[in-house]
Amino acid sequence: MRSGRRPRASIEEQQDKSLFRAVAELARSMYLSPVAEGVETPGQAPVLRELDCGLAQGFLFARPLPAPALASLLAQQAGQAGQAQQAQQAQQAEQAQQAVAVSP
Image (cartoon, rainbow, N blue to C red; front, side, top):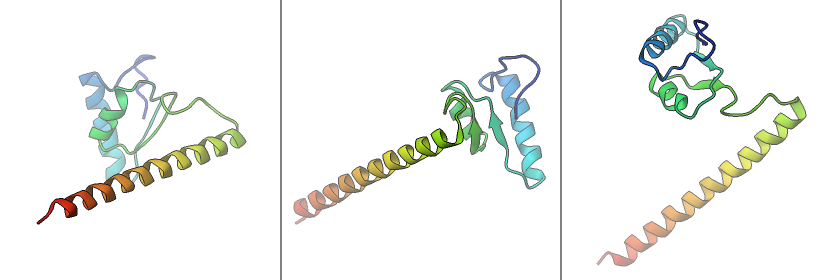
């Protein structure tokens, strides 16, 4: 979804937010998944989540890349996500151990 009324339409503005909500609902009514394109600012991402638009592309996430560079970027991000998940699991295990140690 992209608003064509002006070059820098922003879903952060109420009027544009209403338009994007309507288009997203139309897509879902047709059993389609709405995809936001041209996402450029950090403020747009939470609005898209609020509108239940789970797919997006734009400069906020990455500049256009050739296929090999994209594969490398995705592998790097997957590695970072795995490391973050492992750190979170280790923290949760440590908290659980501390809770057991404190319990009478």
